[in-house]
Length: 114
Length: 113
Image (cartoon, rainbow over all chains, first blue to last red; front, side, top):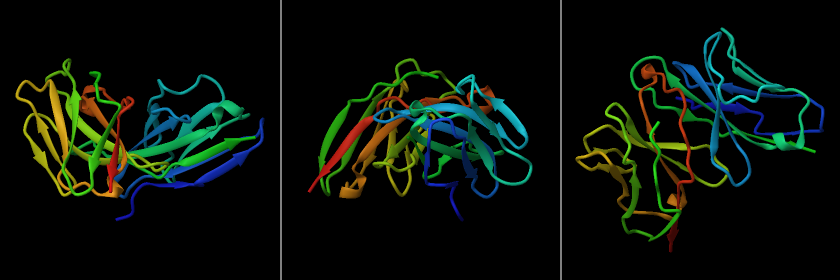
């Protein structure tokens, strides 16, 4: 049973470019969460999505950041016009719709903005 | 979600039990205690969770005090691969509207050969 998959694992962008981070939840999971971890800090919640719906985006920066979880395919976290302060590890977690809502995390995408 | 308090760091000798404490004195009746760990540069790994009763799985045991204001994660035979930051998180069920996990600063456990 494959775990949460994220790609790319490492992403380098220049200031002003766009970054797209992908997350495939565990099989049978329909809830996805994105977290960001700045260097030497703890994880901070960004957004919670179900298929085709954003449920809670209270942790998302107001500008340049967006997320989606389409009916088919992975969840996408999109960062437009990246700045150096966006350099961080971005982790995705998933949980099942029924029963326990324990979140299981992927390996993360490390974004470096030059 | 209730806040938790953990010691910033702990050492444990290899092969011995590692006991990681967590205080959550403001925990509510429907909030669970979750433990995760993060090994350097990897994604957080779920360890165990519980509500009232003590819990045990293949990785660890979770002891929750009767008043639920504190808990202890026990790794029965620590190995070098258990060196990580351990996070104690208190969270209500998602059906109550609690959508995210709040990661504090955790306890940095170092297992010493």
